[in-house]
Structure formats: C-alpha cells, structure tokens
Image (cartoon, rainbow, N blue to C red):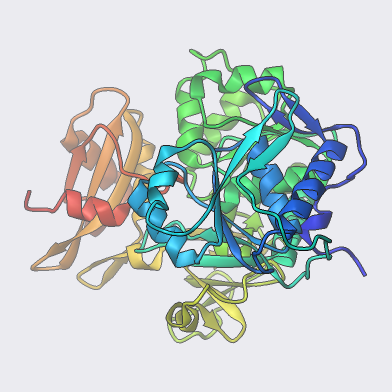
Length: 499
C-alpha cells in the first residue's frame, strides 16, 4: 500500500541534501538528520503518559525546531496543534484549554508560562544547538517505548480557521489529508530537489505549513526559515540561500513590490511567485510580474481542505488573471442557496470535496451541520467556474453588501480602488442604512496625495452608481488578521457611516 502518513512526507529520508535551512545562524539540517531527529524525539514522546490522539500545543516561531517537533509529534501518534506565539496569555490559555492539550511545547516564553500557570498542563521547552540538534526539556518519559506506524486516518494536526467571521473553529487534519495536500502542491508546481522555498508566512496556518514547508519537504527541496518576515532582508535571503520560489498573501506581495527598488530586488531569478489566502488584485499581479520578471500564480486555499483547493498552472499552460485556476486534487462545484448545483458560468457558493478535505470540525456539530451538504464542504465563498473549470472567487457570502436588494461584492470595489495610481491598499464594506438596509463604504491607504472626491469619481467611471462608496476614508492602515485577510467586520464597527 502507498504510504499515507506524515511519517512518509520526506521525499528521501536518507538523503544528505539540505532539508531545512535557518536563515539566521547559518544552521542547516539534511533530510537524513531531520528523519533521525524526528524518530529520536518521537520515541521519547511515545514514552510519556499521553495516549495516542492527545493534543500537544505547539507555540513556537518559524524555525527548524518547529518543523522537527511537529513531525515528531505526528510520528508519535500525538496531535500537533500550532498556535500563534504572538497571542496574549489569555488568548493562549483559552485555546489550550479548549484543545484539552496534554502538554505545551514552547521556547523560553514567559507569556506561555503565564497562560498555563493555573493549570496542571506541563510545558516542554524546545531548544536547538549550534549544530542543529533539537531537544525537549521537561519531558517525563517513563512509559514503555516503541513506535507504531500512525494510522493514515488518525488526526495529525489541529489548525484553526482564520476567524474573520467570529471565533476560530478547530480543523482536525488527518495524516492522509496533510500528506495528500502537500504532495498535490509539490506536483502541481513541479517542485523538485533543485527547488528552494523561502518561507515568509507563519507555520501555525496551512498556507505557510502545508503550502510551503511540507510541500517543499515532499519534493526533496529545501525550505528556508526565519522567525518572522522581514521585508528589508527578504531579497538578500532569497539570493543568499538560492531560493527559487516563495508564496505569500497579497499584503506581503504589495510590501515587497513597493520596496523593491529600495531593497535591491532582482528583476528576475525566481522560478515563480505564488499568492494565496486572500484575493490578489489583477493590477498588483501584473505589477509583480513586470517588476520581478517571473510568473505569478494565484491559488485558492481553505484550512478545511488541507490548504490548496485550486491554482492556476505554471507556464506554458494557460494562466487566467482574476481567477484562481482549476481544482488541484479537489473537485469544485457551485450551488445555489438551496444546495442545487449551478451550471458553468453562473455564480453561487463554492463547494469542494476530495481526499484532503477534513471529515468534521473538532467537537462542533452545529458547525458541521452547516458546513457539509451531500458529502461536499461549503466554503462560504461566492464564485463561478468558467467553461475550462477555472474558478473566480468574488468574496465571502457573509461579506456581501445588500443595498436595497442589490448584492455587491466588496472585492470588486477593492479592485477598482487599487487600480487608482494613488491607492496602495483598499477595503470596501457594508454599513447599516435606514433607507437601503446597507450602503457601501471604503477605506484606503494612499501612496501619494489624492482627494476623496477624486477617488469617488474614479469609481463612478468604473462601477454602477449603487456600487460607488457613499464614503471613502483615508486611513494609515487597514486592520488585517495574521494571514493578511482584511477584517471587514471590524471595519464596519470602526467606521460607522454616521461617524
């Protein structure tokens, strides 16, 4: 039988070639080293009193330690639950308790210790030597040893949804879900041992973890990691470590584009650039390709499907700007509000199914009942498939603006505002209105001077009158979550129409 667990994610566990490279400190571990460390630590973890399937919270920044310990936990039949290390002690405590974590893996972080101070949950302290050897302190390993092969259908990782529509839900991904997704991504982008990815996104979300790190390890290439994204150091790291691609959210792409000349960015060199987790405006995609001389591949992913669902292909296959491409290892369909499938070219809710899609949320039957329909997962996104099966996503169902019965997609307004030469960032949203129910408002971040009426006139030339923002506010920053997604719900609260 074909291997289907994270114990088999490494392309070649005996290879002496680099697997993970630490951008800071010049530490590199090979595939052979990585596999040896995972097996050694998994043996120790299996000798604790935690039973298979127990959750272990992983509160670490990106680094060699993170990847080694995540794989070791999964190999030991435990469930790795990555959490954002930037959370407050109160936020961490709530999530750790909700997960019923049997332990917490962290560095020497006082916030984590505060988070579990009033519980009996042990903290295992992660460290790494100058030669790249990862260790865990505080582990009480007294039970009999011995490693069994994990079950492909056992949960390997708990990830959290982005939480843009309320409290994040816990997504259990099985060994098979994660491995299949990583392998699909590697195959779709033709990743090989010659490729090196520069990881700029946090590993506590599927984009950074599965879309970049695990897909790279599944290809035999090297993943270059640093604790956090640094725009000023990005291109120096890219060149120094001979990276061939990177994947990021639109916010990061825009930052790199705006600072490209100041930071000495090359005009070519990457094999491709990938964008996912939020919509990339067509004007930004075109500017990225012009400046960096490489194809920009827009993809679509959701946590519940092990990250990637669809992606445009690499050249010479057709890339369609404004779309996120056809399904990759997943089936995609469009349904009406009653769940009936709609024909190609018509808009509706995007639903998906496939071997990387989760079976259910963790302990959330209410969410499950709303999320599944006839074996398909309801994404909550509005989109359409063209005649070639390429998907266009126009926004979230819950973010659609209903102005007097007219349904307006905020993303369409964002894209128009971003086409104005003075606008660096834009976000449209709905606010309550006594006459129309809702009206459109927008906020923008400028890169040069512009008047609000100039921006509204620009919109009026390109949008229907009912789509033109009633008010446009110039702000210094637009609130986004950890993955760069606009917090439109927060905008409606921050900027009510009457303020």
